[in-house]
View (cartoon, rainbow, N blue to C red):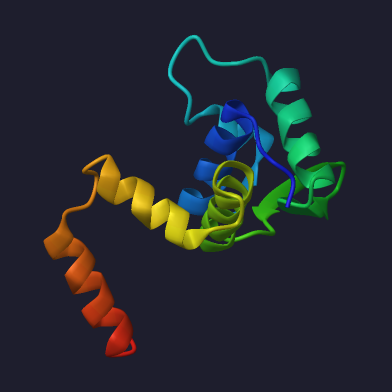
Length: 119
């Protein structure tokens, strides 16, 4: 799964939240000053090239929809971070969270309990 820029991720958020959209509709979700239509259209086409969006033609315009779910994106992003920064070690991730006190021992015990119970 190809990585997204911050702007691309922002645009995908609208598709995940709102469903299929035309670029013109997408513009309405931005506060003033809104991005230019052509700029947004270029981002959307780039997302389609990366496989994140698909489209349906309506005359000479396209309605775009998410081709990758938000959960798929989150899983792919997490795997990428773990690969890049933790040498594919999930234990390394958890160890780092404990060391940085981002997760308490109690929370870790609860997580282990959930895993053991098959949740």
